[in-house]
Structure formats: C-alpha cells, structure tokens
Length: 137
Image 1 (cartoon, rainbow, N blue to C red):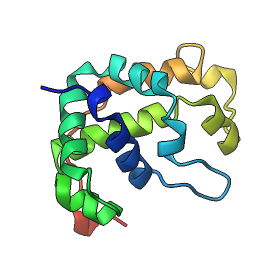
Image 2 (tube, rainbow, N blue to C red):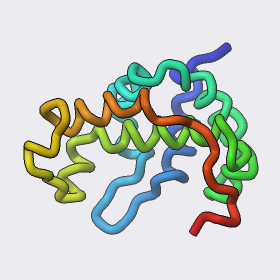
Image 3 (tube, helix red, strand yellow):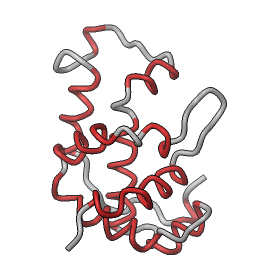
C-alpha cells in the first residue's frame, strides 16, 4: 500500500478541483503545498489515509470536478474521505482564515483556538455518503 506522500502531486491536483481558486481566495492546491497542514489533518484521522490515496489514484486523470466525482465515485467512502481531509487541512491555514475574515469571539472556541477545534473535530466527522448527486446544488 502506498501513502499520501507517494501521490502528493496528484493529491494537489484533485484538491484544486475540490476547492478551486476564487475571488480573493487561494485554491486548495496552492494552500496545501504546505504539507504540514495535510499532515495535521491526517494525524487527526489516520484511518482515512488509504481511502484518500485510493481516491487520488482513481481521480488523478480528472480535469474537472465532475470527472473526479465519476472516477472516484460520488457518493463513496473514498470521495468523502478525500473531501474531509482536503477541507480540514485547507481551513487549518491561517492565511485562508484571514482571507475569509473569520474571527469569532474567543468564547466560541471550545478548546482555545479555531485550529485546535478543527483538528479535534475531524475524528468525530463520519465519512459516509449523505447525498446522491441529484440532491446537491
């Protein structure tokens, strides 16, 4: 079995399909070049690494989100694991949070910081398909 390090460039490509660049925001491909963000997300959910590798392997040739969904299978456990790790790591970036201008009051933090709360939330998120493609917007 391979690990995410072995497929990191294709991982960045599919991450960019999941969270593309937008007005004033960087794509996940750009943000997640900083590998420690992904490592922290995977530390919270080590059980998902092989599912993420599977999703990346299946979706490596995709050039659009629709192609990625078809290649990996949506909904599927692998697709959901991929989106959870990409989104979790993306929102661990202080640059992303600053871009979003998100600064909740300190009392809203459960454990003292948003980053800490995101990392601690990841183990509680279930990676099961919720919506069939026809129910998404």
